[in-house]
Image 1: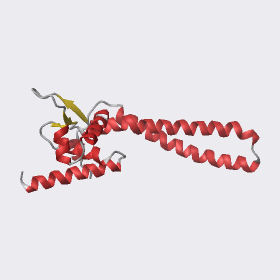
Image 2 (image 1 turned 60 degrees about the vertical axis):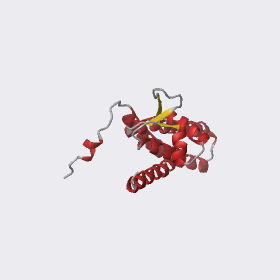
Image 3 (image 1 turned 90 degrees about the vertical axis):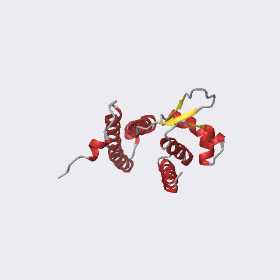
Image 4 (image 1 turned 180 degrees about the vertical axis):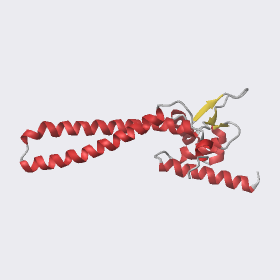
Length: 178
């Protein structure tokens, strides 16, 4: 393969690995996804092990995670007994899967904890000194701000995840401002 193609592939795969780490996934998981995404043909575990120079166990474990997140899928190859995989090429689907599986849960948990804390403060109110009531009032103000933030985040997530439509990134990049 031409050295320019190798350089672009290596750079892109490494970049997706770093990006995955930024979003809380392992770098190996990102590199596997990048390798599959840039491969015109499905790849086996052995192929991935060889291409990325990592253990087959690590490849296997991370491929299961990619499958769980909807970032890759196993594909059947005629006459082959090995498992082959390909990346989910629609990044919007990948983003929705991740947001739906992780961020939505975290926002709901944050709202639940904040609600429980408001209830705890309200229940303790009559047993607090004037100084403690002032501090509780301060806490309630701050918690109210946090709740408002997480409700906006929840609304944004529901807006993004509530639609089965796929965004057409070509249309988005063609928006004329001005």
